[in-house]
Image (cartoon, rainbow, N blue to C red):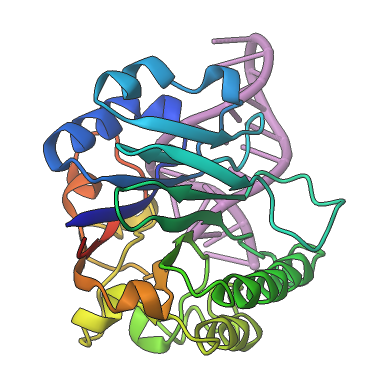
Length: 261
DNA sequence: ATGCCGGGCGAAGCCCGA
């Protein structure tokens, strides 16, 4: 079995004890990290290596940042999302994991938030979603096992947010965002978590403010999208709420899926 | 209506996130 997890850690430096504990306790084979907020030189490679993980990083000072951790060798295939040479934000890394007989392609994705929606941030998000769909379409053409995982900053339906009315005009819930996410999924992906959990109001993010975690008022915005070749191997998937309840947590918690070998 | 909380940066208070 191959376990692949995605986790927006909100700073790898601030979260390092939580991340190391979680890796040691749960031991996923591949981890897709977002919002590392660290340049590559400052990435805690030694501590993570001591737990048996290789790593590949796309870093940026202060903001964004994505990484892939893997117990198996990592062959980096892309360090930015194709389609906009001028986009210098560290939001995408793609690699092939050599996990024995059947390699798997993964990407760690940190999609732009898009708020406030009356600024250039919103069209940037929508364009990024369009670029992701274009690239994903090309990747599907490879007919490989592929997992596009990360913080999509898209809450796909009203069942994925505690207060749909209150969030109606937010960039995470706006119809323009949801339409593009649907178009991406409809290219042929499986939402791994939803394949096992049809029930509403299960979340991967809870705001630090206003006691959202204590009241379980969150959003499901972290997703693992599987190509048909990966979905054929899908054995299980869930949200691991454990890290969100610990000391000094990230505001996101890990989402994982298990693929048969 | 805005801030709530929390991280980065850098050494106070602003920017940013979702």
